[in-house]
Image (tube, rainbow, N blue to C red; front, top):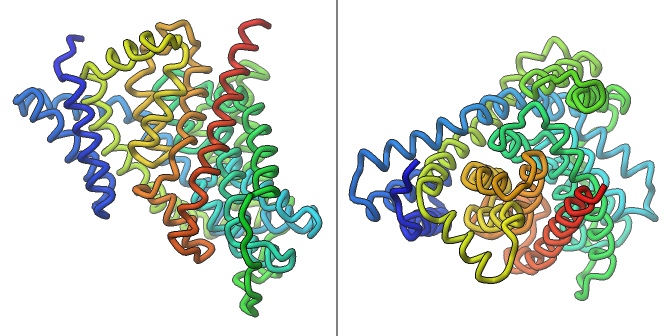
Length: 423
């Protein structure tokens, strides 16, 4: 395909999208508007620009379909209160002496189970606040534990960012392999989060005690029933590397949701769970459509060539395109899903041409997208801050630590990739 759009047009499109998002405009529409203006101004051919935008969305349609069906599992976990039971059991079993580790583990398990990272933080937040008050922890420490745990679990989960990266690299039936190769990075991310929250260099007062409890334990399902759905879904995904029999996420994740409903005694409400999951995923799918338009413009531009030349000029191997593109695109969109999607849709060909396997390319892009996905022009920043009623000034102070956790995981994953080449 002949490259028709100059790099500055793609960069202009991203810049316009960022400005609009900062102005509280719809992220999906911001990306569409940015893609159109950036492309149209740079080539003055509206027909060409629209075709590239549509082409970008077409490339993402397999990922969008899989993300849509993943809503059945996510909806079941939330509406049956299985997610709350999982989080509560983990914090209770680990005890007050391990409060921070318990909060980290709770969000890790929920994101691994297929719960969005922001939804995982919102789910654990009421439990976390109760644990924090009993352990005299501050709000910033508590929230960073949840975020670090969520980031660690998110890179080894069947969440939209992982699904999109695997699909764009052409390995949707190897989603489990994309998840598995990032396990060392996730473990290091958990350790790094625990060390950072234990030794954060600033002090803050403990949270004030409140009498209101936002959940009733007697209404929650048993832990074994709560965890069965995610276990089944992940087991089905891992059949391919274990037995060679591949089950697409489009099948495995809804089956997990069905099992969750049956196991928790809520099968009669399965339709409602699916509807709730659909409503939650619709926002993500609409965002992915907007993401596809800007991805189409970037893919048709010379931005890839500019990045490759820049890496060569700095003496950096093309092998690092995957994590670097994930970092840059997550920073531009302030979203793990959008960042991983744009980076993988745009740079997958260049990454594979550099000799990186599709599975490792998807995994490295995915982990790179955790480095800057928490910037203030994205929803994650505000949703997580609101989960613990944190002031914007304090929420901003967490950004360097969140970036450090994502950077450590990305460095670990890159190191693991090089080790894999030696085995």
